[in-house]
Length: 351
Image (cartoon, rainbow, N blue to C red; front, side):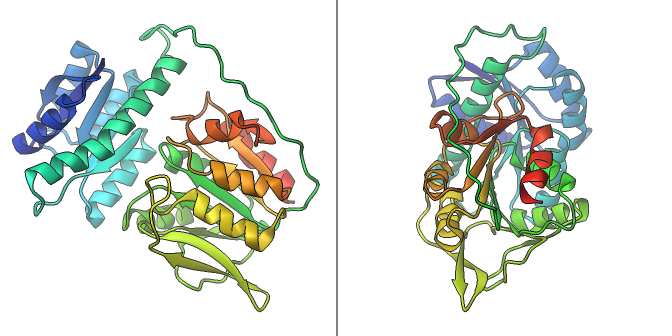
């Protein structure tokens, strides 16, 4: 059983989350709290496997509670509940930078209870299972003994000598922090463009790109229809749109569409990678960072068959080794690296 602590000052939201999670036989809600101070106390007393944490609460808000919990429980999965507003996005991105594992958006006030419960189940339950599963494999020091788990085989495909003309990055759960780490360490005079897909809803990607731009020596912005893809610039796929590239009259431009979801998401890493394969062939470098699911696997296979170089984040430094693990265990990765080594490797590869 996955034991969950639900923290929210709204009785309606607590009931919504508790009821939604209670429908899954693998999940048990072991307690509820109404503010951040109670959350800190209940985490120590109940020792849950995961926490859902509201951001706006009285006495102590979710940001303060997150900071306090993280000091004692470095790997405890904490999922923030956020509103689809500018303020909610700002606070959520702050929470992610402070160590929140992931976030889900609250249903709007106009949806029915049935629709709200479905939204919570679809967003929250897969993340809880992925995050708790990853934590139980990696362990957390004295708090949780590390189970004996056979390591998944990691095979690597043959390297290629093709010089990359673009850097492609895909990530999901845990991605904002990992992506920030990589981009902050890349040089401002990078000779290739960077195209990014981070699974994130509309509005959040706009503010996320702005945050990355302030932290990185590279120019970072959310991609817009028709943007020219230029060296030294980073384009982030906007929430709700697939990002693809096309070459017209010798110029590569970004194109956005609201085509069907792929791997249950839009934007999808596979959509970007496949289009990049058509434009750049094997002259590309692909990086898959932490994330649940397997988005990027098909795209990496297409790129790899053309001679592109594929790098993935290793399991130990990933919040969830779903996306990078799928690529690595399929034998498509040339490098499987800890997060702290990735920027250095890419800098050398792209120099």
